[in-house]
Length: 104
Length: 367
Image 1 (cartoon, chains in turn red, yellow):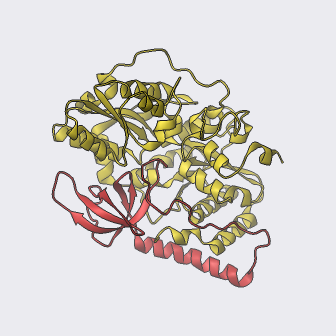
Image 2 (cartoon, rainbow over the protein chains, first blue to last red):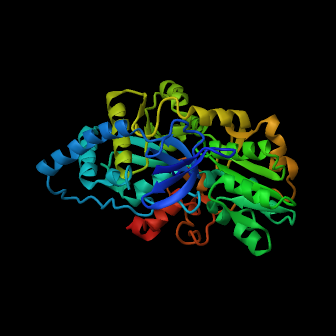
Image 3 (tube, rainbow over the protein chains, first blue to last red):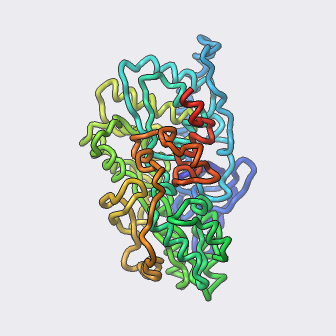
């Protein structure tokens, strides 16, 4: 149920009873309520849940924390080219697109 | 997709697994509360790749699973009324009630419509002024702002024929109920990232402190979950019990303040029954007095026979982390996603469905 999908805000409409916008999820576009992210701008990424943006993605924090992780991954590539136990492929499966409905 | 694909990187996953293996010195039991996290863990095989000392147990964070049978029966009764339209997220339609589910109610002529957002249900109400449109408001804190907004919009724009059947539940009271339950084995939690995106994590701080239980706010991709597990294990090994945030790209300590404000205006905390668990004090929401006339339970008082559960299903034990899905005698045989006996086999975040869909059938598990 608490599935939230990150997407890029490509259009904001201020008129009407509630602030809405269009969010792009890897090519799929949907309307979302932006009322709870007053600072959001076109080009920002938001996490959308049941048609509501609940959080703005903090790109600086994301870059900073991911750099630490990526550094670890690269080190591991150099030192341990093969994991003998084999890690399953974490390929996207179903989660990369927004839900057709809210269940998840 | 940005902020998704990079959190599925195999090299980083291997490195995190190595770090976890390197720091574990004894057995630890960790619960991921959220059903969405359960599915990622099981589907990506993380639970099987962790060192044997780390036992993951799956929590009650599947709102579809914990919505009480009596409310499912109530939704079915409303769906069958000719003067009503029942709107719902798609997950709820196959959840078994006492004798049928919402799909069967629809097949029998009930007007049941699946919506993507609760605002869509308000629109259905606008277009059908002669009927009462009830939205089945199931969910945790993540969904509360959306449902609160739908009621507020209906209220503010005079859509009087819109009502909510409220089945809202809250994560922290459930975590505390698990920690105080006899035979509890949970020593650390992955807290649900999107619940905390709305609520922040201040309400988890007294739980970590009072119960001596590490809590790490965690995201939903495989790398997020591995990092969250590493952070919990580090706390357990070092003897710390704090709230930490793995999901820094989406969660702040205060959460989403404007969203919390509308929730506080529309909902108030109440006792709630959890399917398979029982009543937990102050563990859910109901509409506040100002919005109570939009409450479907007020408009349509409950009638009929008391709810009755399947005798074989052990969903309550699974939801409390005391049993695994394959411990159930009905798992994969009498109970499948096509013919579920219990809600955890229905929802795409229920633990039983996660195990079934990942191919963890009884025979394979036993072998």
